[in-house]
Length: 368
Ligand SMILES: NC(=O)c1ccc[n+]([C@@H]2O[C@H](COP(=O)([O-])OP(=O)(O)OC[C@H]3O[C@@H](n4cnc5c(N)ncnc54)[C@H](O)[C@@H]3O)[C@@H](O)[C@H]2O)c1
Image (cartoon, rainbow, N blue to C red; front, side, top):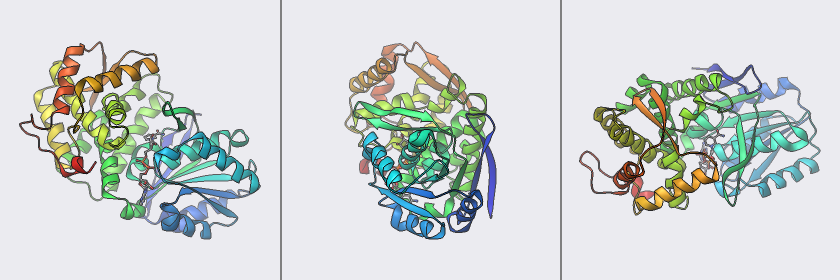
């Protein structure tokens, strides 16, 4: 496989080319950048990825600079963006300069935000390096930073001019991060691709492009219909209403993907209890999460605390608590007005490490 090219929807209309293959950072990306004739190229990455991939990429791209920020969600802030603005000014960036986001979703969101705002907009190339960023964060054009009050509270829609996903870099991705990406890929199967789900159900995650490509297509199809999240784009939030509450209650100790995985189980449980989906659908979701080594329960949390976190999130966003659920694998729907008692029942199940018949706690939960 050299590489495949997909066209994913841009918010401004038209499409963004997404290149997916092996060793793309070695020759494909440098020659892509050369052809564009930018005045300069600024590669934004973090301290983990700079020695692994950033320095080598910078050597291969003419007139380029490497801007290295610390690693971690806690640096996805306005302060780091401000530091990047000042470095860009010092190094003489102009509107013909390009920014390359080389990293996971944190680098993608942060660099995208800087590209959307510096000099009212510079060309952006997303070069995602985590499975989660390849499957999810690098497409859809949402960029932004966190505030002390909450995640992703400041942001914009910024279309990249290209997305370059080099699968070779996944070799160095820690297993725990790989699993975070798997959760989002499983979500894609649940909302839009029963075959992808079945593949994961059988535990087939290799070769990775065979689960990544279908997951990207699910998101791209949804974006084509609803780029700005007026309707169908909300399907991508399956598992996330629960997931955000789980992340908040764990004080962000449980990573996003693991929280979403527990949220996927909660959504399946809720759908079953509301009579929307069968017990078989719920059981398939639980078995698949377990098979992939993804979490299904939150250790040490209380159901009431999770409910409170969900209510808080709802108030902050000034909207009703809505849940994306599934009727069947691949068939999502949105439900509001869920009785609190039912919700609490589901939250009790995901908080209880011991009350499961077909559930055993995977190693990864204890690690989290
Ligand atoms: N914009 C969107 O639509 C969107 C969607 C989903 C998530 N997000 C955002 O994405 C972020 C999460 O992204 P993430 O899960 O990629 O986290 P991340 O960017 O923090 O990356 C996870 C860890 O893996 C490391 N890493 C990444 N690629 C690696 C590689 N190839 N080899 C070795 N280490 C590697 C990173 O340095 C980091 O320590 C969150 O900030 C979230 O809000 C955005």
